[in-house]
Image (cartoon, rainbow, N blue to C red; front, top):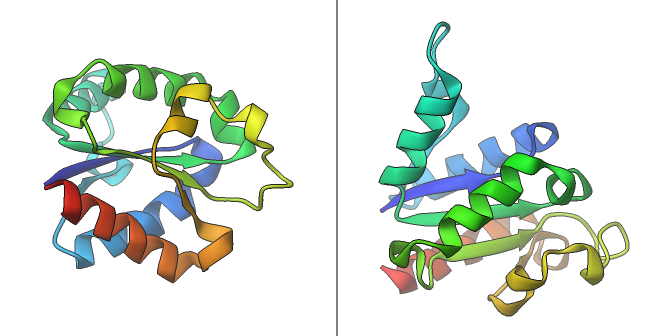
Amino acid sequence: MHVFISHSFADHELARQMGSSLRANGFQVWDESQIFPGDNWGEELGRALSSAEAMVVLLTPQAVEAPNVSSDISYALGKQVFKDRLIPVLAVPPDQLPLDKIPWILRRFRMVSLPAKGKDEGFKEVAQVLQGAA
């Protein structure tokens, strides 16, 4: 399954860690390292989104303010292939990102909380949710 990780630029390292964990569990994960100098970022992102079969959204204070994350979420909500495969991941403690700051539609999905479980356990849970949706 091809997985797209939506995140803010500030959360690049966390997205890289999530991607590594998902790859270790057999998923194909697109990331920015696949864009080369001179490539058109917009075209490459568009290709990555159109080939994705699931989306993980890393929720941080920066991500909920990032226009690209909002666009990614809107795209996923409009595609049938993402049904049961849009996974919001609370990546910071709840006091750093109150529930009312999280887009309302994402609160309707099963959310994984990294602070509650620890990063490694949270990453495993994301993989399990994706495996269950395959």
